[in-house]
Image (cartoon, rainbow, N blue to C red; front, side, top):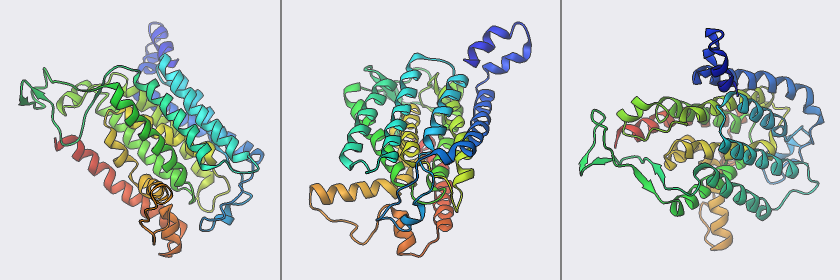
Length: 365
């Protein structure tokens, strides 16, 4: 919306050209999301449903009675801001709508007198993930890039100095859509499982969005840099970066109230759509393995527990019997870590490993 407005008004007054700058729009989106969401969360948090507590979680009773489902406030608000700052495309409306639908399903679970069952939530997540994969890629072949693989020109490995004529790595939608659906589904549920320590999931997500936003804006969304690094150039990469930075602003507003000791929780209404958005940004960056890099702590903390439960329930295979999941509960109960120690140490690992692995993904190819 603002991008279109800038195109119309630049001829009347030169500074309006800032509305066509992706960097300016990303900054504007982040600031607007932070300020507006802070004001609305502060005003309306008491109207949110109370948390039921988690009987099986470590210190799960301490969250009982706190306002939860904050996502029902900051997710729609941030999506509206995203519609203003992200250059308009029809397929973005479908993706924004699915993020909103993930929020809505999470909100109804948060406010239900009896929590939804695992299979019911898993089914809704699967439907949303499938539709999101189709909304992103359609049914055309998908061009991706991979770590440790360099494209070739006529049988010769290409170099960043001579990227012309690269043979794109194309994958049929029949193969890639199921993979994309799995990535989105796992991202939703891993993020949801990690929402059990004050500030943990919000902080990890903010850092993941920061790294993905930088990659989308400065690498795959930049024609010269993408050519030098032998990765595909995605013209809409910088658009996705604007959305990523906008949601960082929203997460900062939420974390203001969720810092230990928290008095506001995002609930499934926040964790499920944010997990979906994390998977969407990974897929938009063109390398499905980035989910292992940008969401590594979320996956290690939450998704490994999903694997443990699935193996035990369906195959009667017991692994990690002495390890409690989500892993943050194991750290608190078995290792004696405080909530603050879990947050800081998990964040240190994420901050050390994610940038390093992104560089290795880009350069060792």
